[in-house]
Amino acid sequence: MTRIGRRLVAALVLLLALAAVAPVRGDAGTPASQKDVEEALTCQCGCGLTVHSCNHLNCGSAEPMKKEIAERIARGEDKDTILKAFVRRYGEKVLSAPTMRGFNWFAWITPFAAVLLAGGILTVAIRRHVRSDAPAVSPAAAAPPPGDSALRERLASELERLDRE
Image (cartoon, rainbow, N blue to C red; front, side, top):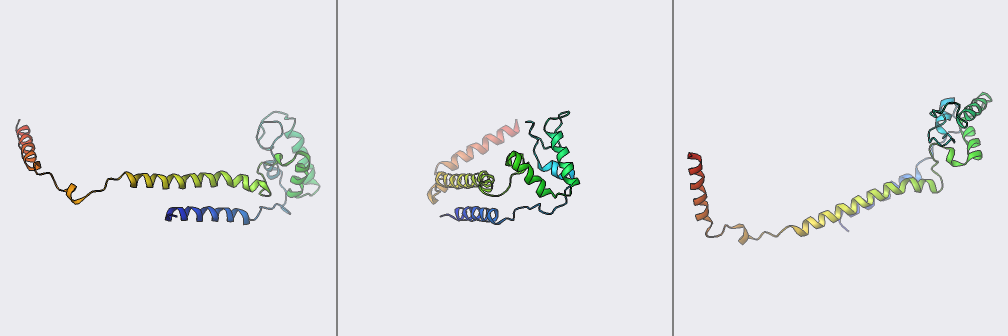
């Protein structure tokens, strides 16, 4: 395996190891603010925006969710509890940022790993192609041919003639 190949494999292994042991961002016990919770949830009206950012007037999804969030915060629930309640009702699709548990971490890492792997393969292939296409220069090929001095003299005289004109 080439030096580049070993580095690429080491980088890929390191990336996967970091993703596997990275702590899952926990919101347990975090004091809930209305905006934080709304930003963590996706509006279910189909706009693809967060509950906080949904720009539909009197949205049939965002407005009731905002009201429920405000009620839960008033009852003293933390952000994690509120998010879990919405996940139970709507499923994980309601979260604006998927959790890094189960298959989700693999789904997030795979595209980046594929791009790194493809880049490494492309780099190795291009370097091999360039090396194989480079002509070998022999000492005999580096020396000018015997009739070359006559051609050089002719070229020099013609260039001088052009400069004079």
